[in-house]
Length: 314
Length: 321
Image (cartoon, rainbow over all chains, first blue to last red; front, top):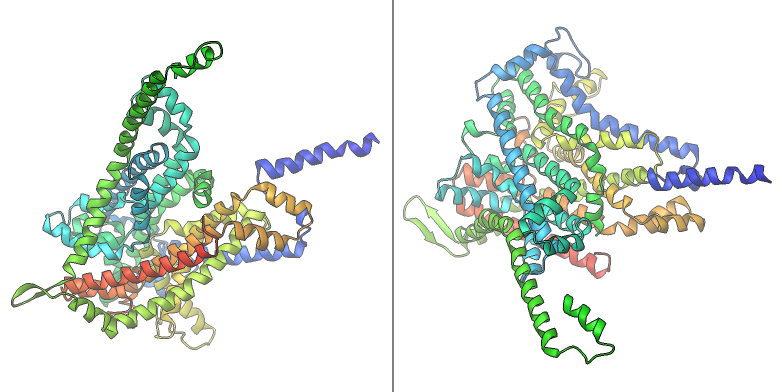
């Protein structure tokens, strides 16, 4: 009797562990065939191939000399292996502007744009979630409508307005628009609503804390996971943005990486001298994607956090 | 606060609390709350100021400038709707518009289906190594559209691209990926490569938020795997799917980076390939900013109307939050 009942608690515990902590429903519950599992895993493998092919190609190609890029098999290495000299060439070639400067510019734009967007969204989200001021809903609807407005609708006009106030081709002209992120405001509102208890705010008020102090000392620490996610989201979209800087900035000293790479890529393909630029464009592209890939790996746990989760259904 | 306590404690054996005291308390509390409310505005204001200056002002200016025409001789004159009639009657604009519609109609459904498939698989833990695949699929999100296009463009390049060479080495005819029949397909592939991983994450997180007890009780009731997915999970995350569709349609109709970047390799990318490419060329090659602004306004209207109609149609079905 005891022999048959003994395993039950352990299997229940295992099931609970499966359901609760790892939050993966165990397969056995569905009675899936092993063949189904294999097929699905195979589908994942095929899509992985599709995902990794260009990344593998760019890595392999960045180790080749320019003539070898197109004359040898693209998916495998060839002699001579010149990765280091290609990388050096990326930083020393000044023909169309300096890669190092583009890298620095982009880091500044993405950094300030990301921090700015996060700060503005955190404040606005907290304000919307925890205060009841007149016109609140109208204001929020306005901001949400902006989600539907395509970036092309205001890029050229933004450039014209910049030209009028002599702000075109300046750094702030590029990074300030990165700070406007209605999605971030929405996510922050949802997250602040769920994670900053009203009672805590009221208690702090009774204790005589000012609103700014309450925000900085109580709300912000509670919103850290959301802040991290929103920051990453905005750094990535600023770093990768091409259209907006492309329209509002035409000074090559202020180029973003994407602008600079576009110039190099075109140079490679327009001028007959394909050879010279192929290798360094490829190497430069590879360098340009590495900081974000690194950031993903380091901060990966935040992508799994409950932020987007609440945001999409709440 | 204290008054409430006093009235509660003494109300039983004494007279009811004086009306005046309660009134004063209420008024004081209302004043307190009112002040607190106004402070809430201070938190929202910084965002709203930037929002107004860098988004609303340009938009308004865009509409304003689209009613004027700048000529070489005669300067800028008010010409009413002439830029709009020109844009709406312009075959070049509608050719590009039709092409982006076609692009959106192909790219968005394919991508959403693929993303939903994988999001479901990862959510249900059907595939082996699901976590690893999920992380791998997300990688392209870190790659700028410019770089993605440069990579795919180089791999598919006429005569020399690695895929073309594989065709030739197998004795097959040159596939000419940048030919008129294939070019849009190439752009669809690039866009799917860029955005599927991010879409998977959005849908996956939505699926993860479906209450566990709903799924568990279905399992206890003996519901089949496919039924749980199609009848429980997917209907619950319908708002997320709708959001993903709208975001991607809005993005697809603004198609610019991919065709623009491919244009030196692919002569088939015309000056009006998409409305955004057309607008760019009108603004910065022809310097007709007013006409470009009109194109931008028309495109924005089309996009807003499509997304609003789509949203409303979904709301009528009672499926939106």
